[in-house]
Length: 247
Ligand code: IPE
Ligand code: IPE
Ligand code: MG
Image (cartoon, rainbow, N blue to C red; front, side, top):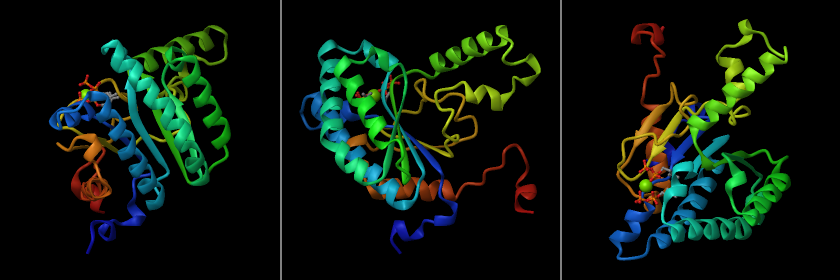
């Protein structure tokens, strides 16, 4: 049986999040420039988005650029922005035709004007699409997102829009940039790094984590199926005992 056939469609994660890491090392291993790795990374992403949509996953969140990534050498940052712009331009038609809804989280005001425009157009164009929500974290920092939420809660409290007793996990989630998206059941990180790098800190409290040594540009459909199968083999106990879960 192929890996795909082994997947239990009834138990698919609704939301998969991915830290797409290793583009630079992938390029280096081939004696190429880092930017070539980022280009190859876009191809891999296109493939995994299609694969996720076909399987029936409803939300795919990808970490494309962190606030910390602004500190990379200027030519890498500007190269990444160009790659991003070109990727939206060349892929938006097919994305829309595949019934994919685009959403972006992060401080997009820091992105070049042209990129912001393209993103807004893409969001507007795809806003009623239903197959899968493709959520892109751009200029994203989870700590910033959490602090913003706290500021907005304080503001609403001051203006008597909410009272203190109402502040709980559900309300807090509604102040995060991921408010319209359920928490990811599965978080994948490629490239062998075993860290979270400021991604979805609140949202992944009970996510299953999957790490693979494969560099992102090499991450294939088969690797994606493998991650889902691994997820499906886990027992999610949420603090309970195994015996309680099996009842
Ligand atoms: C991930 O690949 C893409 C971004 C962070 C933009 P990297 O560029 O981090 O690749 P490595 O980790 O240096 O190999
Ligand atoms: C995390 O990767 C951000 C993205 C994948 C966009 P990094 O390569 O920037 O992470 P660190 O700095 O090595 O943790
Ligand atoms: Mg990296």
